[in-house]
Image (cartoon, rainbow, N blue to C red; front, side, top):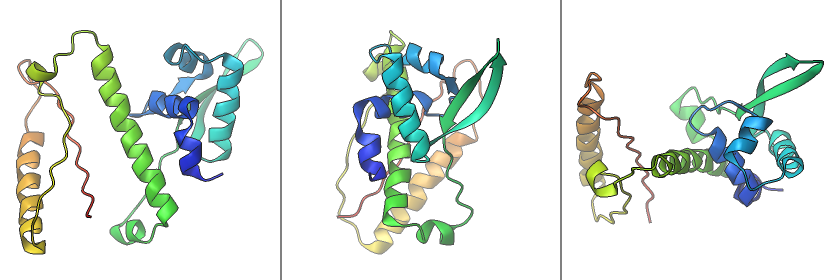
Length: 172
């Protein structure tokens, strides 16, 4: 089965979203995040994701004669731009799904905190369709990068709130 079809299953997507952003969880902790899925079903889908090499066991804890496993998303380690460019189409799709699953996990966490105010918090998502030459596009990306880099240098303080900014560029 292709990895994209594996990921798109609703239960497996919930598992991936639960493990997004570096979370490491046991089956019991996953069951707390995913309350509407029976534990036996959860185990079956965890095993499917393990076999597909999308998640991994990152720790094993001895608890009263049994082993409790801790799961995390399998990290893709890409060392260079050349390595990134030489990835297969399936690898790129897998990385993109992991990226979007992390975004969905962050957004769901934000909405679940109870007092989410999209306008006040400046939360949102949008698609901007722009018509640019290659040179104009390069300049646009440089300028966006400068603004984001400047904000990333800000030191934490009580009046500063963390905002997650993600960029996705998809040419037509």
